[in-house]
Length: 192
Image (tube, rainbow, N blue to C red; front, side, top):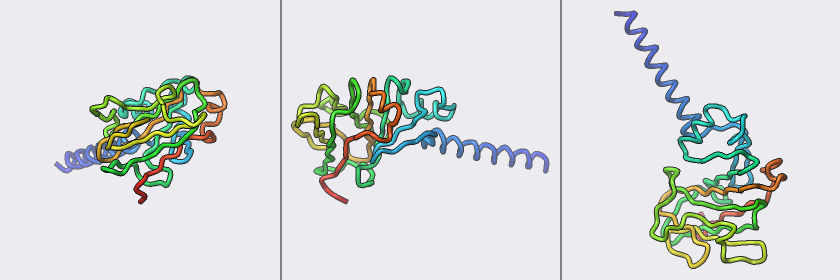
């Protein structure tokens, strides 16, 4: 009986440690090669041969289609430029200010806390290089809010969300040094 209890105890401890390691590396996304540029974060190993099994599993769980870095570079923001978590509330929009990004084509998309597109009646999920209307030469402004906005609006629902930038066919300088490009700022009109 004692031997059985010891074996059972070892199995329980092994399962708990395995689940904790899975949560820390796959669910939470503990990827290697992390790079930050303001509120935006990317990984140098997503979509490359250096990405290990935990990173591939995390990419599969979080729904990010990871193409090769020479084809696409992904940035994700979970906070605004002041470091505050992105959280949509009524009448409290976010503003994204930036310049055209150094890629053949780019998009900025909002995702809900479940890592999926946020359903909305307008059927809008992102702004892109081609869809951005409000421009000043090569710069743009986009609005992220619960309430409709006339131009460059990315609808979100109340609660936490994240923003992702995709740079398709990025400039070779971006692929070489993704931490030092001019990415958009994210500001809240409500402050903290």
